[in-house]
Length: 334
Length: 276
Ligand SMILES: Nc1ncnc2c1ncn2[C@@H]1O[C@H](COP(=O)(O)OP(=O)(O)OP(=O)(O)O)[C@@H](O)[C@H]1O
Ligand SMILES: [Mg+2]
Image (cartoon, protein in one colour):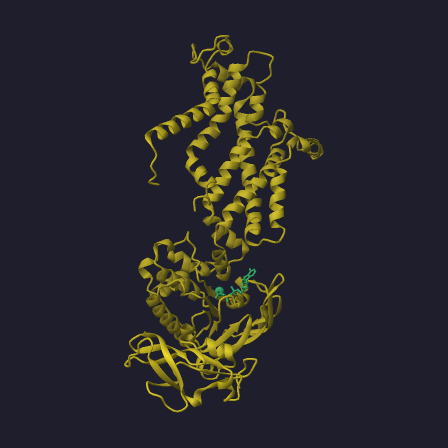
């Protein structure tokens, strides 16, 4: 079991309020991702759940039990750090065995679990090495191995993949997702990479300046963003926003159109926005066009990779009328 | 490091370094040579460099007059004992200052350092009276306690500096892995800080070994250490220069040997952090 509830949790460092007031309910077995811009308090929130920071106010329940004041060692959670935080003076085997030793497990049990974890994570041939003799990806696996052997109530990950190169990151992303499907243990995963968030999460918490902007499934967030911040944060490339008279036509303070929700043509059509191509980023499968639209500014358009555009071409954009997002003056979706 | 230094400069620096080293070493060399001279030769008006009549009688005389081995034993007990006691107190203290600092931590550190700036004589009378009332005068226990106290600021400062270099993530990982405070310190912090702890230990054994003010003032016969042993030969009554030299040589020999064997560790420990 591993449900996690935060009730009116607040956190300040001295005078500075980092988390004004957060309540969250994470169900047992869920994969929840915290995303948000740098400095919004993702790590702080995770560390509050872990017990590595004390809450200023509020309650943290694990499986319904009040753990607000419990030290990290008593909470039964496991954490994987961005820096891996392996014990440099211990072999891989001892690193993975450490939580079991702390739990006073028997020697046979320790051996069995370490062997099993090493096999699952392809670490069997490195068991007698020190962490410094491992690559970044292998270190990350050891950190994960150390987390799984103790069979925690939940796993906490703080940007575990950000020190890896792009290809390895995709690999490890799949491995972690697979691990979750296999173990069915609650996982909380912090990232500022929205692709990781969208692909891994059952539900995503979008944080901004210590507040939860929205908590929902990836597709919910994509299709029904609660406000302009979430609309701009989820989706890649970013949503295009338009203010002023063009938005007023839709009875809104501002409107948003995703790059993939445009019809694009090279000849004038009724009701379209006219613009000039600035940069065309051709990825092969897709092309991202950065278009300077007359009177509306720069917009990003996603189109298939077959058409070719070059700098200075005139293009005409027709937003898909059914997929225009409308926001009021406070940025709330309407 | 591929810096171009002319041959002349290098020769100049080499000569200077040797000159300074010899200058620093010359008193020890003189003691070494004098210890093997007769008393008459040691104070001869035209001093000799090498002993003309090589003799070991000074060492015998010294042992007969005031038991060397007893003093050496006391020195070992006090220096090792006070250092271990200091580490037992200092490691948790430095842990708290490095990893759970408060607004006042820096002040506490400065205050501890400031106690080392005060002349020891300033507290001689209160400490002497306290020791007298607690019957700690001229006891190894009393001497170990005072030595622990005077070196504790240095121990905590050194450990604090080493601990600051350890990434706090790793200690937090231990906490997440279910380690209570004691296990975190014993299984993670201490093994990672072994080089720093070893240097602290060596330096403090040396400091305690060489300490003379408190060992001489708080002991008379029973608990005297080697510094008290040397000073008992420095009375100007007789022809004692050669015996004083022999006593000094015996007193510094153990620590000199220890320093020799651990010099790599000492240098590494004392420059720790500076090279990273
Ligand atoms: N120990 C601390 N003392 C004071 N301020 C802190 C402390 N830890 C974090 N903060 C502040 O809290 C805010 C949130 O930090 P946090 O590390 O949670 O951000 P984050 O969302 O994880 O950012 P990133 O994506 O860059 O990791 C930041 O403004 C940071 O400066
Ligand atoms: Mg962070």
